[in-house]
Length: 498
Ligand code: GLN
Image (cartoon, rainbow, N blue to C red; front, side, top):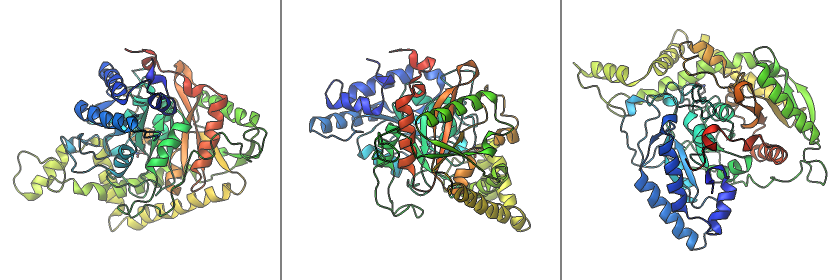
């Protein structure tokens, strides 16, 4: 049986019907992981612990536990701290770090019965769009191994796209769930800021960071989000709202009445998302998806997000500013490996940090401390905060004439490894369509909608207003019922039992 081509929903049905056990599933996926080590998706495994968790899940299943996630394997981005796996956040400075507790997201998913397969590769401290800044080395796109998987949740996207895990967790500060999901041909959602607790998620830019699920389908994402989201007193920015069922709208028409599934839905198309800089291969796939929405009854309306271009300088001031503060704890004393040789305390800090951090992280710490410094704070940081406010308002203006916004996730398909790494500003431009939802705190998702040149996957981005996750997933699910893009298998997934 090709378990790796199945969704959470399908595997769960088989687990409940006793067609397979959680332990057999865990063994199956662990074998696939070891056979595809050259993808460099996983950075830490603990097979004993995985099998222990699977055994517990089997006991629960035998006792009649009906949780949809009971016994389902999952891979965690290495930014979530874990008791039984090392947590490095892709950085040398956290070499061999073992947390005394599990992150909230990890604990919740494990409480619902998910079995952790291991930790997956990512850009160092989630800074990057290609997974190339990882201390564990670049991870490879299972659609073409000379190409990047996207970042920063590159390992998570690979795990799902190569059939190494039915699902993964990711985090998204400026696109890190949506962009790798798009580049690897899977589905992922970044919820409204504050929906998912950041407790135990190593901080990059705290006012932007948000965790979310990555899986094959919108339905699987909804099932996972049901468990991941919810108030947590341990995160002061966690929203105090009642738990919600994100699967509640799946399969329903937009109006709730019989007829075309998306009749009555107004899809906003921001002109700034379809202008210069968008490659024709991505444009074609995204426009075809929009046509499909129309066939399903949706109406398209032009909208404008006039400050889209400014999202890049605004984000690349605010995110590094917060990062420079968050990363001060890695000093060789509170956290992080200490340099072997040093003269005095200051020298120890200096050497530990210069040896432990990679080039991109250092660049951002320097930018961050610069924009926060006394003489430049007003000119950069304060100004960026003001424009951030306008960007959020622009979305509210757009949502007056539409229900959701659709557009590309990234301007191009996955690039070649090494292509962008030496030119950071070029890399930052890749984030043009994904940064604004984070700056505004809005939910946004990516799902497969076609292929560009060389059979590389393309995703479409759907952005909703605050707390509209259930609606976004409803639209995505309706689309996935009518199309097969999410079922396309990467060459690595096609390699059957391996
Ligand atoms: N590419 C963006 C950055 O480098 C976003 C990363 C993320 O969402 N974690 O900051």
